[in-house]
Image (cartoon, rainbow, N blue to C red; front, side, top):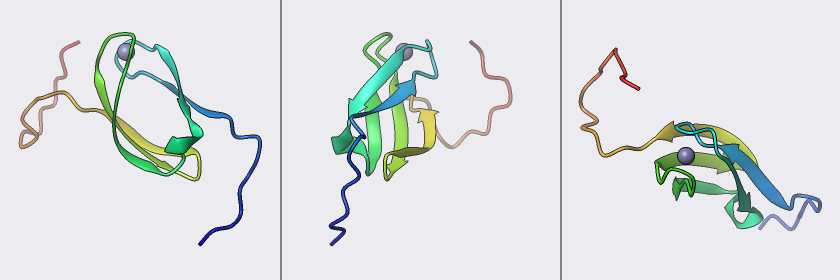
Amino acid sequence: MAGRKVSGVMGIKLNCLSCGHPMEIGDAYEDYEGEIRCWGCSTTLEVALREGKLRSMKMSNSSPASRPDAGTAR
Ligand SMILES: [Zn+2]
């Protein structure tokens, strides 16, 4: 479909929300929605990438999602 390939995108850089560990993921993830695992602290991050740009990222700990908690303990 999209025959346009932007060269120069060698990797996508993220920082772990939990430990701040810099992560670089391959350009295979330029359109990706799902989980990645920080290899610094093993936190699972839920990311959404579009065209190599980070759209959203959040921690995906195994906490009950049906709970709008206000105080996030560190
Ligand atoms: Zn981490």
